Image (cartoon, rainbow, N blue to C red; front, side, top):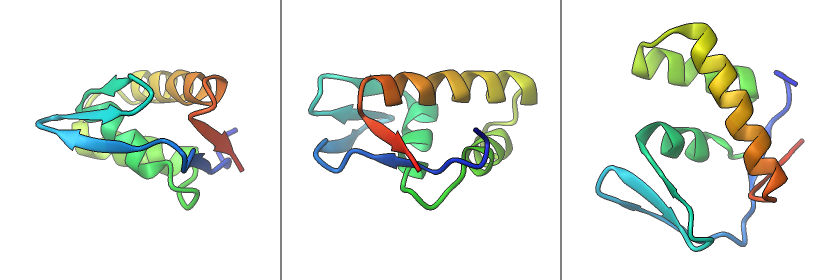
Length: 84
């Protein structure tokens, strides 16, 4: 799974509002969710996304990895991203 490249659903309109990301699906994301969402561009692997978030937010590596994988699975389930 770590080598998969998440790609945002291009039908979803999103915009930054203060420190959050708002999507036309009714979802809102905090700063970390927004960072993950922006990296779901079909160019970054899940491993690269984890590395980026770990480096930027300096938190426990295993927690970051587990949380991002869970988040990406949820986004895929909601058809907000696809894994390539």
